[in-house]
Structure formats: structure tokens, C-alpha cells
Image (cartoon, rainbow, N blue to C red):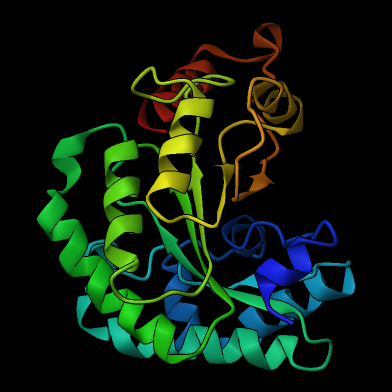
Length: 255
């Protein structure tokens, strides 16, 4: 039974963060390179999420595109990194028949100048072809702050495949995107161009995610998804030194 057919009869639980766990292990380099350098670490994380009850796991490919891999001098290893990622995930999911999603992350942050749409499409094409070759149960598009980029990505992927596409935005404030558009309007637009599942992920935690969904009408055909994180920092400024507070403010500026 396929992913969409299963969603028609039950709520599915997905896995959680990959990068957060890797960081907790002391790994702070290129998470995606581990698919070929330390595959056993990635497979163990998949297995642990499955053991915790995940019905869906996602490949370790959030930043496995040429633009992001270029930061580490790995832009010529897109094929190898994505191939390995989906093989690892499918191997981990095989005993329990969990669904495997090929993950594609957003490239633009708060600035459209981070990449042109043509650069994004070129990078997307290279990554998507490798993920699709591994026969995933769907594609997961996550952490997109720029709706224009996400819509371009969904539209282009629909020319490559008819498998389920999960399209998720990252909100600026509960119920509001970075460009000021209400979440409900954004999800409707994503459904209209071919996304099978629409929703949100990252930045905000469970409380604000639920709050945001209170203003969302059920789509006509698409399903809803929510991948909240641990929410924003709760800082007690009275216990911080001036230097510590400055570091936090600098980090928040670049998030």
C-alpha cells in the first residue's frame, strides 16, 4: 500500500531531526557526507527512530545539493551522497516496511540573493534524479522560508515524477510566512500546483504549530503535515554575562 493510501485511513508518525542528533554526537561538519564516510551512524539513527515508533523516515539529504555541498568542496559528489542516503534509509526500513522519503531542503534563507531560481532548478534536478532512482515512497521538501522557491521546486519536480510530494514551509511567526502571506493561503497554493501533502516544519515548536493550524482549513485533496522543532530559545538574561548575551544575539541574527 502506498503512502497516500495509508494516509487515507490513519495518521502516520514521522521521524525527527537528523542534524540535531549528529551535533549531539559531536559531529559538526557536513552531515550529508556521512552517507558515504560513516553510513553506519546514519543507519543507526534511522533504526532508532523506527524503534521509537516512526512510520516514516527521511533520507539524510537535506543539504545534499551542489550549492550547499560546495561549502565543503563536495559539489562533485552529489550523486554518490544521495545514492548512499537512500540505500541506507531503505535498508533500515526494510524489516518493518516503513515509508522512506527522499528529503530535499530549501536553499534560500531570508535573502532571495542566496540563489537564483535557475541555480536552484539546476541543483534540484541533479539531486532529485539520484533520489528518484532509489525508488522512494515520496519526496519531502522541508525548511523553505521562501515560498517562491518552494513553488518553483514543486512545479519542477512534477515534471520529473508523479510520486507523492510533501511540501512544507517554515513560518516567520505562527500562521504567517516570511513574506507576510497567511499560512492557509500558502498551503492552498502548494496544493494547487501538485503537492499531495502540505504543512510546516522547523523554527517553531508544537505549541505555535498547533496555534498556526487553527487558522488552516482542511485542503480539498491534500493531507496536512507538521514537523515542529523544539521551539525558540527561552533565555533568562539575568543569568547571562554580557559576552554570552552578545553571542546569542549574533546567532539569532544569522538564523
